[in-house]
Length: 497
Image 1 (cartoon, rainbow, N blue to C red):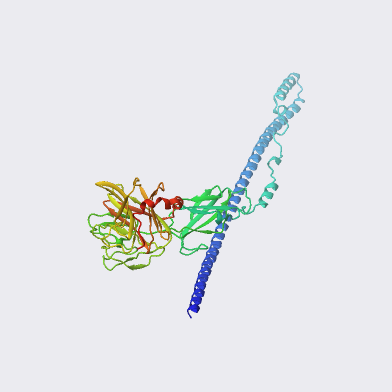
Image 2: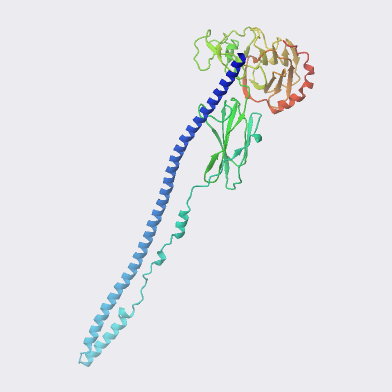
């Protein structure tokens, strides 16, 4: 019966996953269909604009050529009209002179005839008809303004859609996720020397497999990538995965997207749990400050809800890595007395994790470490067998020490600007590093018998927290040789609790 139930549960789980996968594919198809309709409409509009632009250029050229022909026609007509007018005047003058000469032949008086003959001779010498060019100044030829658009027509007939680059192929084997950086590598399915650059898009997600359409973050763009790989650095890994896709671009147009690739970017993310803090601490998600007023006027924060009071108000419960279901919160007296402590809101119960803490410059005293949930309300970090920490004291005398079970190991190192905390739950190791240089400060070796919570103590100052970090490569490398470096810490190492 139990075996059948288990088999049925597996079948139900498989069916549910398949239904979710099909629904996501349906959403993708609908989104793609909508995109085809919208993009086709946009392309048609652009095509109309391009042809309208061509028509406009042709109309402008036609008007310009018509104007040139009319100007040439007017110039030649004016020249010919002027020459015609001169010829008419000359002809009229010549006809008048001819008539005068003809009449003069009829004069009988010699003296009068001689006078007329001299006048005719003088007038002939000055007559326009004998100084007039009888060659047209311009011809009627207009062939120099003729056109032949046969080549242009052939060119227009070759108009076609732009050559689009093929979709690149992302190679997951060549991609690298390390040190809160992601290197994405791709290649073209075939050589294309017209490619000018690439565009890389990425987004964070908590879903494995193909990217989803619904309830996802927007794609972020990195443009003008000249090579075939790109590294995104300084990322906060506050989601389990990241989707990546890339497209090639030539000088004119971008090609199809590559098939998307999903890479795992899992890291420990947690906030400070205000419900677990001492009343003299002012707590935000990622920072805590000493508050000598005793928290007067400060109400515990509840994510997504307005505070209604201190007691009986729900708050996020401390949970294991990856889940934070709501639960009834405790009161602000979780820690009291001189235990100026606040815990993280996510328990660590397996795996390797890393986070960093930075103290304010004027902070007089603080501790950073981990503790079991059973840490007492009056207990200070490092003073019980249920907590491990390093402690910095800048008041009266400067001390830098590792603390556990009320034992202290002074550290011969300079207090770093920022402390990196590495917790290997399964390996029973808690190490502290200079977060900038990755120099090892101290390591505890133990066996964790129950989940641990990140713990912080602060007095007269404040701490800021940075999570969503992978275990740095330098820290992983140091872990291989660290076992030989922790012998001096044997006085603080304890037997399993």
